Length: 73
Image (cartoon, rainbow, N blue to C red):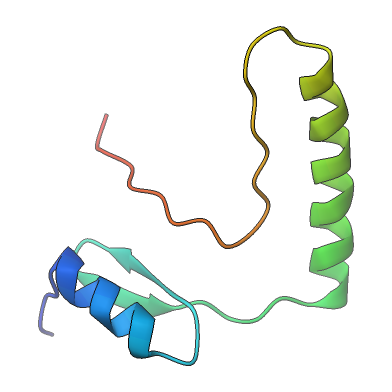
Protein backbone atom coordinates (compact mmCIF):
# COMPACT_ATOMS: atom_id res chain seq x y z
CA UNK A 1 0.00 0.00 0.00
CA UNK A 2 1.25 3.47 -0.89
CA UNK A 3 2.16 5.92 1.88
CA UNK A 4 0.75 9.44 1.57
CA UNK A 5 2.36 12.66 2.72
CA UNK A 6 0.63 15.05 5.09
CA UNK A 7 0.27 17.58 2.24
CA UNK A 8 -1.41 14.95 0.05
CA UNK A 9 -3.80 14.21 2.91
CA UNK A 10 -4.77 17.89 3.20
CA UNK A 11 -5.53 18.02 -0.53
CA UNK A 12 -7.51 14.78 -0.28
CA UNK A 13 -9.54 16.21 2.65
CA UNK A 14 -10.45 19.33 0.67
CA UNK A 15 -11.69 17.29 -2.29
CA UNK A 16 -13.34 14.49 -0.36
CA UNK A 17 -17.04 14.22 0.46
CA UNK A 18 -16.35 12.21 3.63
CA UNK A 19 -14.18 12.67 6.70
CA UNK A 20 -10.92 10.86 7.14
CA UNK A 21 -7.84 10.87 9.32
CA UNK A 22 -4.17 10.60 8.55
CA UNK A 23 -2.12 8.04 10.49
CA UNK A 24 1.42 6.96 9.64
CA UNK A 25 1.03 7.64 5.93
CA UNK A 26 -2.43 6.09 5.63
CA UNK A 27 -5.69 7.91 4.93
CA UNK A 28 -8.44 6.22 6.91
CA UNK A 29 -12.17 6.86 6.46
CA UNK A 30 -14.05 7.92 9.58
CA UNK A 31 -17.58 6.53 9.83
CA UNK A 32 -20.50 8.86 10.51
CA UNK A 33 -21.75 9.18 14.06
CA UNK A 34 -24.99 7.88 15.52
CA UNK A 35 -27.68 9.53 17.63
CA UNK A 36 -26.31 7.76 20.71
CA UNK A 37 -22.78 8.98 19.98
CA UNK A 38 -23.98 12.59 19.67
CA UNK A 39 -25.93 12.42 22.94
CA UNK A 40 -22.91 11.03 24.79
CA UNK A 41 -20.46 13.57 23.36
CA UNK A 42 -22.75 16.50 24.05
CA UNK A 43 -23.18 15.38 27.68
CA UNK A 44 -19.42 14.98 28.08
CA UNK A 45 -18.86 18.39 26.48
CA UNK A 46 -21.38 20.04 28.78
CA UNK A 47 -19.73 18.47 31.83
CA UNK A 48 -16.22 19.42 30.73
CA UNK A 49 -17.36 22.93 29.84
CA UNK A 50 -18.74 23.41 33.34
CA UNK A 51 -15.49 22.12 34.85
CA UNK A 52 -13.42 24.49 32.72
CA UNK A 53 -15.40 27.49 34.03
CA UNK A 54 -14.15 26.80 37.56
CA UNK A 55 -10.46 27.03 36.60
CA UNK A 56 -8.34 30.14 36.18
CA UNK A 57 -6.38 28.83 33.18
CA UNK A 58 -7.46 28.75 29.54
CA UNK A 59 -9.27 25.54 28.80
CA UNK A 60 -10.97 24.88 25.46
CA UNK A 61 -13.35 22.01 24.79
CA UNK A 62 -13.64 20.74 21.20
CA UNK A 63 -16.07 17.92 20.51
CA UNK A 64 -15.98 17.65 16.72
CA UNK A 65 -14.28 18.65 13.50
CA UNK A 66 -10.84 19.63 14.73
CA UNK A 67 -7.68 18.49 13.04
CA UNK A 68 -4.76 17.95 15.39
CA UNK A 69 -1.14 17.16 14.79
CA UNK A 70 0.17 15.09 17.66
CA UNK A 71 3.91 14.56 17.82
CA UNK A 72 5.28 11.35 19.20
CA UNK A 73 6.09 11.45 22.89
